[in-house]
Every structure is written in C-alpha cells, then in structure tokens.
Amino acid sequence: DGGITQSPKYLFRKEGQNVTLSCEQNLNHDAMYWYRQDPGQGLRLIYYSQIVNDFQKGDIAEGYSVSREKKESFPLTVTSAQKNPTAFYLCASSISPSGGRVEQYFGPGTRLTVT
Amino acid sequence: GENVEQHPSTLSVQEGDSAVIKCTYSDSASNYFPWYKQELGKGPQLIIDIRSNVGEKKDQRIAVTLNKTAKHFSLHITETQPEDSAVYFCAAVARTDSWGKLQFGAGTQVVVTP
Image (cartoon, rainbow over all chains, first blue to last red; front, side, top):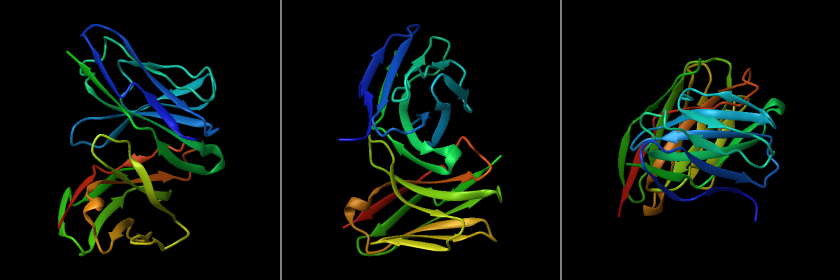
C-alpha cells in the first residue's frame, strides 16, 4: 500500500520544547515538502528537498529545521524558537520536479498543539 | 514570484447545481495548475490538474478550464452532491521552477446543501 504517512496524527507539547514530526513515503518520489496550515488559511511552504542531504528554506522556515538522510524520510523539527507553533502540518512529495513531474501528493497531516 | 488569487472564499450550492471556482495567476511562465480537495482534518487530495498546452480537462463531474491569455483557470463541479462539501485549493507552478514549488490560492469552502 503506497503513500505518504505522517505520525502522529495529534501531538501535544509544552511551550519551550522541541518536537519532531515524522514524514515517510514509499512512492520513490525524489522531492518532499513541508507545509503549515493555520485554521481557515491556505498552505505555506516551510522547507523542501529534492535529493538526499539537500534541502531549501521555504517562505516560513524560521523556527523549523529538517533533515533528509534517506530518500523516503523527511522529518520536521519545530523548535522552541518558533513563536506560534500550533498548526496543522502537512508533508507532500512529488516524483521528479527537475524532470517535469511536479504533481504533489499530500500525507494526512499532523495537528500540533503547543500550550 | 507567482501570486495566485482564488474566488470566492465561500460557495453555497444546492445539491444538483453546479459550482465554479476561479483562480488567477501572475507568472506567465506557469505551466501546471492542480486543484486539491481538502476534507476537514485531512490532507489535500489532488483531484484534477491541467497543463498549459491544454485548454480544458474533464474527469466525470469535475472539469478544469485554462485561459492562458487572461491568466486564469477555473474548476467546474456539475451535479453537486453533499460529499463534494470541502475546501478546494488551486495552485500554480512555473516551468522555470526546477523545485516544483506550488503557489496556492487561499481556498474556497464549498457547502452543498441537500
């Protein structure tokens, strides 16, 4: 059963703690992306990666960090420096943007609540 | 950079009627235009897309049209059903963007009333 998995579905943390959100894909897609969605809002790009060990900042990267040690995994760490971390986080992947295959497919999301 | 505007922000339709959502884009280099459907608490689902070499694409009750001259594209849903109720997002990406970064519209909340 191919797809993108994100875990956990719900995550609760205390203010000041770092937290890592998991994203795994078994689609053999080259590129992976992290988005943030606030209630009633659109999607904002946090980080993206096209190959292993390489990633780029998106529009709202401050307070976040990522790694891409394996093609199938792209974890996102929300650090204590992120001022408003409570949000719905979405991971996506695409086959090969550099090869013109830009269709993005999304995971089910992780809802993070920081109090 | 690319800027995508989406209208309306909310759309209420009677079951069986048609729904139309419109998006405009700013970058003439954009050549790929997907539409996503997001149900409450779930990730967006790619429902249809169109590339700049095509003017219209249909898939059962949904269709997308593209006007490159005017730089706008639209989603058409015919014979709406209650399960069509969701938030719909349009997006665009430029052929010059090797990273495939999508620029999303703000979304349209569609409510289909029985």
